[in-house]
Picture 1 (cartoon, rainbow, N blue to C red):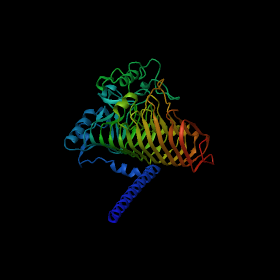
Picture 2: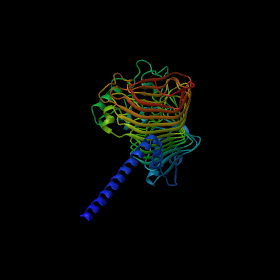
Picture 3: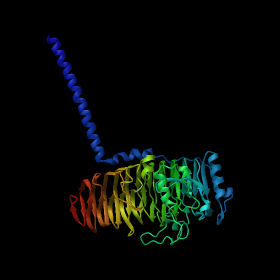
Picture 4: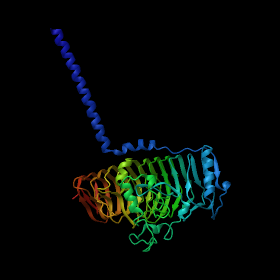
Length: 485
């Protein structure tokens, strides 16, 4: 009997040790998860390692050899097309654009092609809409058949635009910009009463209705006779994309628009374009995007992360995630790094570090904008080592009631959470350090300012429906602030 009792005691001891071991593992796991949440930057290296730069074979295809003439007057569309097709057919390489000016319509990239502009090369894009054939593209978070983007790639792999040359969209108050249909904040984009514009009832309002009612994309036919401006550079559904070193000026609409892409690198690009809706870079429904060493001097947001509009975004349901912005300079623009307003499919894991922003025309440094028609979730916006000269309105603005097209209320309540700004210095903070306007049933959650120094702010905070805001080692107008009140 004693023997059996001893065995039972031993079994109980072994069982107890097992329970203690599992409990210990679980505690360590929970502790690890807590540490991970405390330091979301631990994920950055792993995300960056997943972003693959395209590789190209060593072969050059000079557009001059395919009939291009560098006088800025001779149309070179067919020459670019022939060189690109030959390069791709042979297995890829560089399509080289030598020094000089080249007039062309739309350029469509193929697999394994690097469009390379040598220093002194400038591609002048035609201002005639008829030089941009109908393609499957997107306008403000809604897919459609419309004028081709100036540079376009659809479902391609391993593509690039590189070199020290210039891409000139030639948009101005006479070409493309008047289609916006109005002046904006004192800017004259060339529109006059009676001119056609995107606001006409057969243009943007029709597209919005089509997207909301699930009209198939192939039946959303715009282009000729309509006035929706094309994007400048749009890789659509592409994998392994590189845009490096080029200068981009005078864009009709959004400038860099990778949509439904995976593994995108934008490196050393210099953007100067002050037209309407001239966002610098708009990753949409895209994963693993690295934007670094760039200069943005734009007529709208410098970087605006998108994920579809309303019903369409929810239907596509591809989050924009793992977006890294590093070592960039933001000059003019409505916002430095912005999420929305088209973000219905959701955005997560946005990392911004080592950037500078400085302009009397820069409205906000970091901005999230959405509404209850959009729905969607923004989870994880992490910003560190940011140096800001001047912003007009706010260092951080989060608005869950954003609206520019009339009533934007609905039943799809958005959620914004986990926004951290640390190691931030601002010389002139404008009206607010933080301007946050949430929804009562969906408060903005977990906003942190850590080691932040902001001078010349009119008011520290304007907060509505914000839950768990932490202010740590933060000085506003030379006064230490311990809590948001």
